[in-house]
Length: 443
Image 1 (cartoon, rainbow, N blue to C red):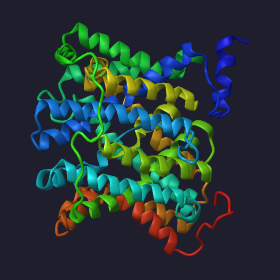
Image 2 (cartoon, rainbow, N blue to C red):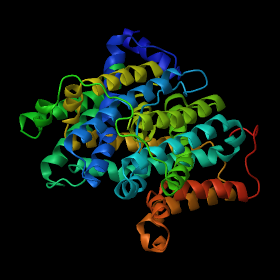
Image 3 (cartoon, rainbow, N blue to C red):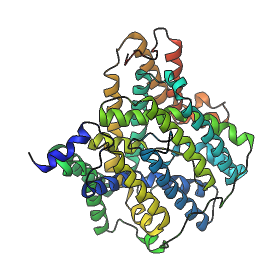
Image 4 (spheres, one colour):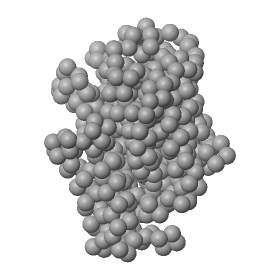
């Protein structure tokens, strides 16, 4: 039996505590960083553009986003006491809060955003610490539906990357599609036909190949790399905080509902990588870490933190569930936050190149949800929960005029799709008779 075959056995058994040799762990961790990097820095770029921040302040926000994502990833993967899932969870800046943060930043300023984010982070952490009492809200039928919603709702984002990225002037150009197709074919080809370590790093090989081809054809902009400084340390309290009730209320509500997304990601990791549900301790530690990481981010002038769903797809795609691989990725993110030129190189990867990889990962997330629901009885009750939740998640946002009369903060939550779908699943599970109870197993 070959050395490669022997090396992959621990991950196949779902051993999150297995540490691969560094020659394997480092490339595996780098592809996790590449998968989430652009999404992580996009939020500060979008917020900065919406409120017309100067370039220096925008750069500071981007650095803080990378630095805090690294700290949060280390906390989630390695754990600090009861904090952290101790699973391969990659943390980053949440895009789901953008529709709420933009109006707050525009009318009350960025300090109000960070004050509201701190309050929302505290609320999430409290839910995480109380997970044993709220665990009944997330039975297998609800969690499996969450994971499907996350994967399917992310697919349009994957296709947008494939076509060149949101707002690209040449959106949909043939060379974008060709680049994405190249990455897609290499990644799937290695995943399906290669063996051992080569199969595991299929996404990394695809991304590197796509980047090289894009550079050869002049499709990579290196200007930000040249302009970036070599060393810069993000400092806390650079922007400060203000507390306004009108900003805190929508952020806290959105933070509480976002717990369902965190739970869905944790389920996606354990189901996709270890074929099991997360334990109560893993759920509690993971959600608590999301909340406390958001609190830390607020002090460091960074935006709310949450587990990155594309990396959940990476775990399902590669089958590597080692938390130490992700911890090494957290170190890389810390380095990117301290050395802007390093981060600028990764940020120069064209959106289309990333699109070819993340499209597969988002599909794998949805597949993990389907896999989980395959163990749930398809009774009339459960089919109503699944069907109506998916209907709310995918159908309602297509007709925003239905909820046009709601306040702006409520409309932004409806627009996400995930929030109305998640709330529907939780409420129907509570209301319909014959529900899951602690100790009932996977029913």
